[in-house]
Structure formats: structure tokens, C-alpha cells
Amino acid sequence: MNIKSSFMVLGAILMFTFQANAIPFNSSVMGIDRTENECTQKCSDEDKQKNKWEELESAKIAFFTTFIGITPEEAKVFWPIYNNFQKESRELHKTTMKSLKAVKELSEKGKFTDIEMKKLIKEYLDNYEKEGELGKLYIEEFYKILPVEKVAKIFLAEEEFRIKMIKMWRKNEGKE
Image (cartoon, rainbow, N blue to C red; front, side, top):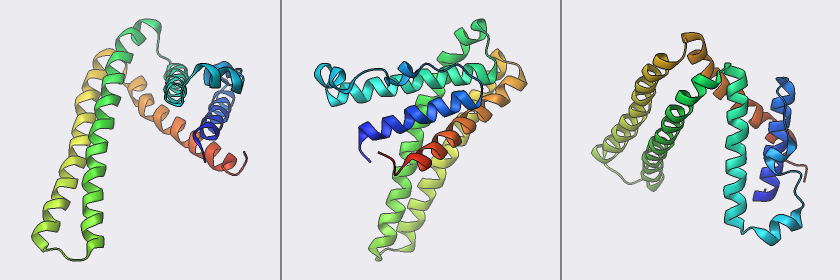
């Protein structure tokens, strides 16, 4: 599936997500109202991808704000902290996946010592543990600015959003 069709699927996913949760959704959030020629003439592929990512993030913010019930006052404090958490989480996850890839590559190579493999497995598990520790640090920050019920909904919103996106992508995967 190419980038254009991937973003079309994401647009459909987001519309489904917002409709299923009775959340107002404007199709222009995903750039659906733009003509292909308009963006082709004005945007490079990198710009298009960046714009789509920003639009997806905006839609996620709208979904989370509604799902969690974040007030405007809470949002001013919550979003900068949450965005930092997401950025740090992505970076740590990349490191964890690199460690797992190293384990896989060594395993597929077939020739390795127990010491080599144990070292890579430990590195992977240490990185995985760091991801959990980061979550524990940020949860304390969230407790400072949101009631416990809303903090719980952060994780529910992430999972709900992710699951709906996956389901819609699978449903529309063969339709181009």
C-alpha cells in the first residue's frame, strides 16, 4: 500500500472513530477535501507526509480531549507533558526495537556464543524496562494535573484509538 492510500485509510479510520464515538469530525482534518492536483502541485512528498502526520495528530488530540473529558484549563498543562511523554516513548521504543532486531539477526545468523546472545537479550530487556519506567515517571506528572479517572482514560483512549485504526485499516486494506 502506498503512502497516499495509507493516508486515505487513516482518514476513513478517523472518520469511523469519530462517528462511532459521536465526536464531530471534519473531513478536512485529514485533507480529504483537497484535490489531488492541489496538493501535488503545491507539496513535495515529504511535505505531504508531514502535513498528514500533523493532521493525524490534530485528530488524535480532538479524540483524546473528548474521550478523556479534558477541560481547556487542563489541556494547557496536559498536552505539553503528554507530547513530551510520547516523544520520549517513541525514542525509547525505537531503541528497544533495535535491540530486538539485533537478537533476531544474531539468532538467524546461527553462529553465536551464549555470552553474545545473553548480552543482546539483556540489552533488549533493559530497554523494555526503561519504557515502563518512563511511563511510571509520567503517570506521576499526570496525577498532578488530572483526576485519577481522567488519567486512566489516557491509556484507554490510546488503546481505543489504536484498535479502531487497525480495524479500519484491515477492513479497507484491499480497497484502493
